[in-house]
Image (cartoon, rainbow, N blue to C red; front, side, top):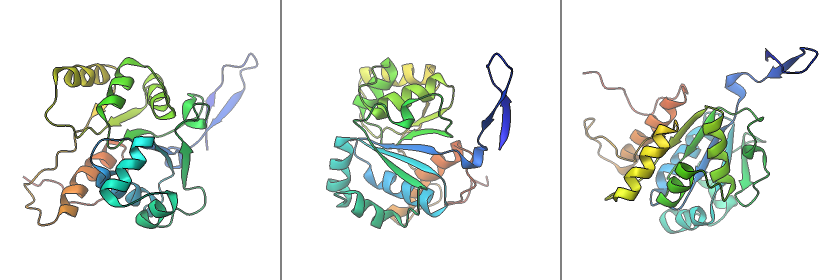
Length: 213
């Protein structure tokens, strides 16, 4: 536990959690790309990274249609043992939950996959759901926000919304795997994107080798 000076009249100190104990917020929305989200959650869970999980209504539909995951029990089974409170699932309709408050310290947030509707809401700060509010909070607190869109092709509206989000501080990380490692399986393509995501949060996780030149 580290300490930072509080803003109380007495000049008291308040406790701030260590970075390695801070939760990473993972949001799953309704853009095609569920395998990326499932693999990312599996990696975070097995590597014991505290994770706050938010799934939109369309995110659940996406998981069902692309991965056959229809509920929390199936998601747990697909991503390994969550163990205690290491992975906490929040209701996206509860805009008063912990991820909605800037006073709650987090490692940051990743929206994977990020639908264009969610991208627009984040870019314009409309905050209609817990996912959108949590992203808004992540930006205003100047924490890392990684958005993983998969839409293609992109309209001018999409591009402008991405630009707005990037100008506000978000990292736009398209689900576009590389091929220089000569992948032979779909899982390798998925891991390529997941590796880039965890790298942005400084997590010591190695799924694919780095480019050696």
